[in-house]
Length: 241
Image (cartoon, rainbow, N blue to C red; front, side, top):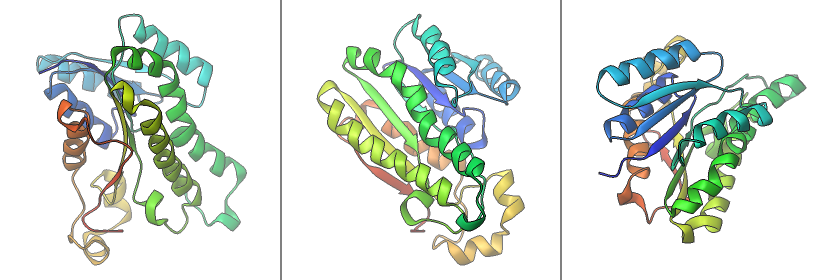
């Protein structure tokens, strides 16, 4: 097994934590990014360290590109980071007619501009190793849209366009770029907003997905076995969309 350094933005969220655990279980050193939730990221890093894995937490505001570059370059001082999972995101829903400029900008800033902020310092060192995995966590909303989420859907669709372009630019260097588009995935927020009966009506598989199922897909795309898969947006949605 090749051990590499992996950076997971939003790495202590329910989905980010599942991805961090999966990558750690594959033997990678996991760099868990957080912004407001640094305490959760540090707790996750301690949990992984206690299980014999290599993990650490760091804080950066992805909407502040210069500050993010400084934080990431400090991590690069130790060596290249060959796996980037951009999971950080936020939503602030409203019909477009009632959506404020701040609602639009804040969601696009974290999900889409944050991808650029995290990746830009990493990409040249990654290319230099002739091996890399770039995985953006998009959403089924970015493929099929969702009422009240024009900002979120636009940002998540933008990630798909970005990875398709990156795949063209860097496939010859051994770097793949893909998007994973989850549907309805179990989390405290989903449980509060949507009863199981409603999920069963909407999703052909009649249930919400588990964070670990998304993490399994991400783990495969981040592996050596997925070297010929690039430029793809893969829905993991139980048939929704």
